[in-house]
Length: 227
Image 1 (tube, rainbow, N blue to C red):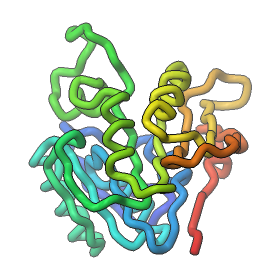
Image 2 (image 1 turned 90 degrees about the vertical axis):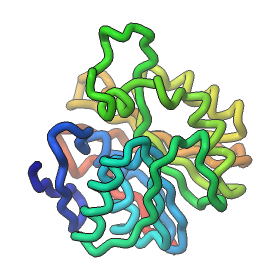
Image 3 (image 1 turned 90 degrees about the horizontal axis):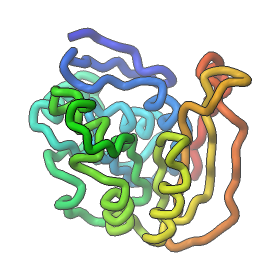
């Protein structure tokens, strides 16, 4: 296990080798998240809690995280204690999670919908983070809507080649795209990730932000903090 600095924050996290590690998508989403000072924030599939640290850095009021695995949550708890950050953490699938509505929900969800088991990682924790076996896109949108306040926000990072699915399924559940940012490895390269913010029950114009380039951290931006 090694101690890693979380770019853009004042925090360091221990990350066991056999668990999913934060990466460029984590940082992109952490910087993209639109956090208001009095926000209650839920991270779906919180893993080591990285996105909640970005929310804390932006002065979120209350932090909550859920994950499927007891040992993942125990590692996250140890990191939060060491960093002196308060967060409520639960071992629970999103489909069964019950809680008062949140102002902001964030998620770096599983990207791949392959049915071929041979293409899936044998490590259950990494497989759950990458493949839709435990959380498909439709379930994600359905339960995000259930757990959001009216006009609440949902921020996520996803694969560019599935952007049509993301927007269509979100709108099917009353989650309307408000902001879009596209991340590229470098200039003149294909898109690597998309960052989307949805708003519950509020259909407004879509703001397409300046692109991010993975070889230029200054292009990532830093959304928040608002009153």
